[in-house]
Image (cartoon, rainbow, N blue to C red; front, side):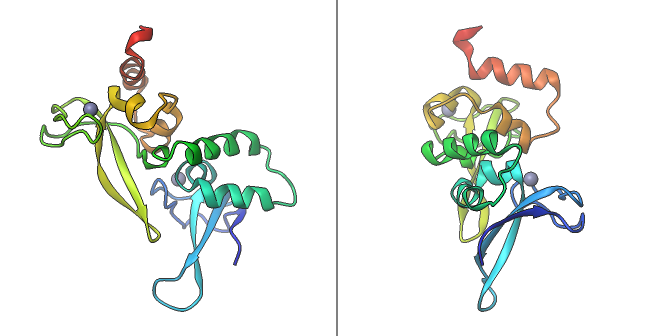
Length: 177
Ligand SMILES: [Zn+2]
Ligand SMILES: [Zn+2]
């Protein structure tokens, strides 16, 4: 069963990448994966952008196989290619304030202070995304090898306010301020 990009037939399926429903009629990416409970395969559905961000390899494979190119193909494939090249980018799962001071940054190994902005990470294995720690926002360059990650942070933390986004941007690029 190949991967597919097709309109959602109902609004019931939730995106594996962000956990929110995919609207009926919206184009979605279906990754074909081995069925863990039976013979054969099953499909994991993603919003297009969530697929490009979190499952770049199968997403690119699918984009390349489409008979008619998508309108947004260039931007989506650009993001997916960055995720293949910079292997840690697909781990990004948004941005949030640390709820305690107990977590240690996976980049600098220092504690993340309570209330500080942090980037939650997920690790993909056997069809599932598992939480795998956090990094400080200013550690992004060292960890991801890029600070061009705002779209990913917003995608997976859509509740960030404009003020939150400005704070995070300032922490991503402290030297540009
Ligand atoms: Zn999604
Ligand atoms: Zn750090």
